[in-house]
Length: 238
Image (cartoon, rainbow, N blue to C red):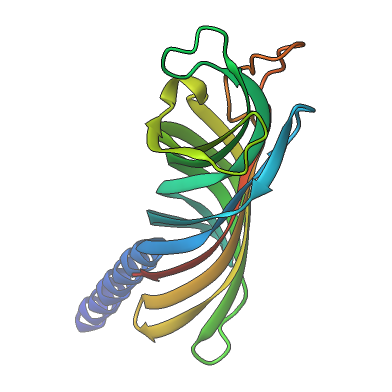
């Protein structure tokens, strides 16, 4: 009888330990975090009448959610508030003030477009080397425009002096949805337990046309460009 009781106690303790281990393992399969991402953004122009004119410095931030589904493999999502932009120039006819005919202009625009982006990606991690773990990431991003502005310089009739306007609201000229490919490589530094500091370089490559407007010069071409960015992300996961 005593042997049976001892055996039952041992089995119960093993079941309790196994249940605690399973719960601990389940908790560690989910990691949450925050990140800040300064970077540069530019436009890749695909329309003959429009030309890229430089990069813009931007700042983004976001929340990270990693779900482990196999050893060293994670399904990664979250949400990002990303700032995209770039500079573009083109020729157009515009009216200014009481001008009833219009003036020929070279227009140079510096765009600032903000999206809420939902990333869906696969993250692959190495084993831990000391306190460091390295990872690579590939996936897609779906962005929804929340604001769009431009700073404009107008060079009228070949003048070297620009007529400038700033913070022009242009949401009616920018498409609402943006689809992109996301590539990232980085490193995690373990601070103890499940908390780690991480840094990563992320390339966000747009697939879809940013703009929805045409110029006023025949053959009235549509602005066609994708926006890309390269960011340095720094954050904390736990």
